[in-house]
Image 1 (cartoon, rainbow, N blue to C red):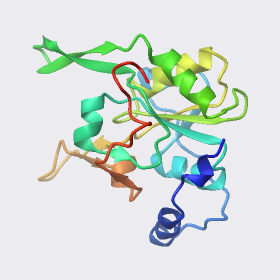
Image 2 (cartoon, rainbow, N blue to C red):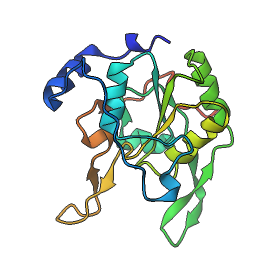
Image 3 (tube, rainbow, N blue to C red):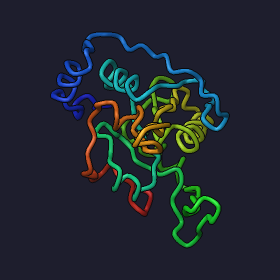
Length: 206
């Protein structure tokens, strides 16, 4: 893998200063096992967004970040700059509304596992040693089952990012209900709205 060549050093230096972290420090992985069964994974491997970042800095050639969110979701809410692979685990179906929740139904992407595995192989990832971190909006109904799908295919180091890209909802105050608690976007980690060609998902699964 050559991922370390694409990881911007300027981000690492700036964030190390801003977060009070040492670039040479070994990552400390201490994310708790989620209480919700839907957020738990077969591998038993959990990280927060900040812990995922630490892993990327400590082992740049041995970590792959997979974004499992819907393409339109990614376009409008932002994209983690360190993403290696973007393949949606579920895709919104605008022809089918869930009247109880007031949202479109999300349909499973039948090509998900094949598409992710093809990308991993293209990156020369190793099934036994590469740490594959799956990320969705908030770390539950997409990143966890996505990690399990690849774990079932022999990828043993499959992690779920427990706080996801957007994080959790604030419980009180004027911003109650807004997703601004933890998560990649709220943790001072690099992100933006530009979708990088060759990484973002296309309708043909590539």
